[in-house]
Image (tube, rainbow, N blue to C red; front, side):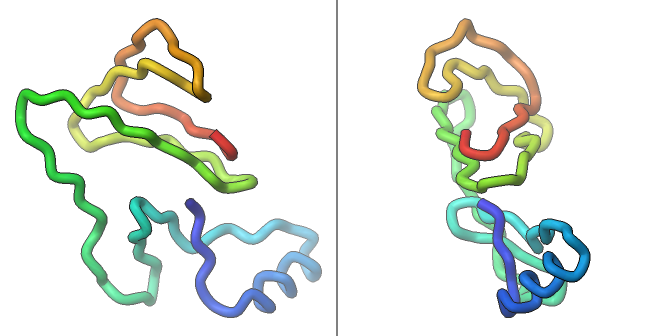
Length: 100
């Protein structure tokens, strides 16, 4: 999820003055995120056990932003997208567009 910090009137003024859409300050994973100038809170952590399989449900609830989702130094297998089972595809990142 994209996260805008600060007063929304600043984002509206920028949008009107420059005819652009503002860029979010950060993103959230499990409700946790950091932004420049903000508190250095701990990142979201998902503890796992070696040699076990985990199913992650990744949702981009934004209306505009797209992400490349990856897990440092790990490959994973995609088995479903947008609620439809797929033939398994292995990789180390996946693009996730708005609303997926």
